[in-house]
Length: 115
Image (tube, helix red, strand yellow):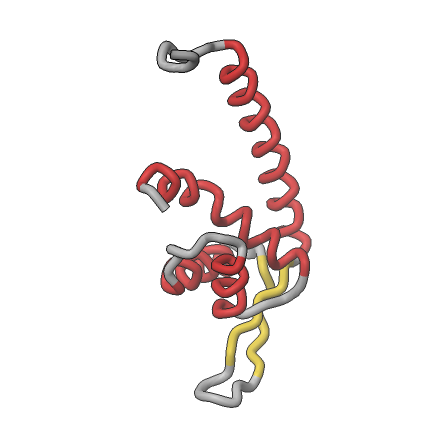
């Protein structure tokens, strides 16, 4: 991923993680694995874990500890009603921004296109 993509991803990663959790509860490693499988190969586990701590502190997920075969219990994150509302807001904002960006792209032809 290039620097520009990384910067754009920072602003959307929370919504992406909430979307994953809307599908089913998961722990941090599962989320990181799913992100990497989706093509976000440069995402560090630490980035995902830090984000999970923030969304837990903001009350967007419920957390249960489940026994692990290796090591301490794992935290499994489940999207709660507050997180679902936040995710719906994310999608509304995403559609708004994507629509405006697409309009600009259609309406403004950069000098270097078509040369």
